[in-house]
Length: 242
Length: 193
Image (cartoon, each protein chain N blue to C red):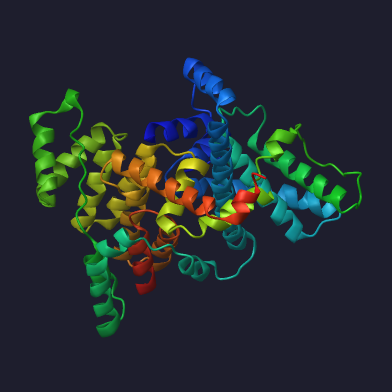
């Protein structure tokens, strides 16, 4: 029965091809119950599409306000945040730390940075062709958070092949850990991988904070906070702290 | 990322990464709204009308981009402008205002089928209301799958599920729940009379 439902779904979404499709359509002509189920599924999917379109419309309205009306867009965005339990749980520790700062201290950029910086696992040693002893060693240093030892090797790798996005990302995080925030920003700019976009944004924000560049940090965080993903909750908390 | 070429813009709009997609959407909005505004204002409309139909044009465009193997025969700008123009034309006719349209920009023909992609009908509204009875996690997963047309693997990554199977099961469960809600609703049953 389960497979059967999947097939109805595939058919309605136009994913059935050739003989499977033909067989399904033949059955459809004889089976009134099936025809009704297909019709139901169509209506449900159209409704979900309508729901998605409605959400998109709301999003476009905020873009419009941002771009063409000056109505404190940042605040509106934070209120629309869609908190997800997982992300929220992951940031309990962060909330506690941030609450501490809110209570005892004015935002201090260096401390804010220190509370929020955490290692990020990057596996850049994933190509069989150049899995050399040296790359392996660098990967180990990086994974052990021995940034001082990892830095020279990462710089070499990045220089040899600037387009290796994961090397650039690891290098940027290493720079950041070593207190070289400007170099970190430079390396982050070279990471052009859509899959890493929010990670990059997060570390960009931290680098700006480290440099005391509040406005720049805020801009990045606002975009991150309005975006569903692993960094959404963290970004909005940090944003409020700034 | 920059979205200066149509190729990059389309890639951005198709991306499952919310940050990338939002960036592309913003770029699309910023670069195309001024022409639509100009057009609507020259044809008996207010700026709010322009914003409203422009947003609908983007929605229709995005839906189309996702529903089929869609290839664009003109620039994104001309295409989105043409959809907006049609939407405005329809609205003018409905309200029996002016029918002669003042043109300033290049257009292409947009078929009726393409305009039907906007799900603003009664039927869809019924389900949309029923969707409100689902939790946000179900709303999100169903919307990602059926509206944004993301693959299970992409949704798994977006929602941080431990495996594709988890995502798949969750999607089926949510769909079952929606169907159950629908089947116990009188307005849904009305649709089959």
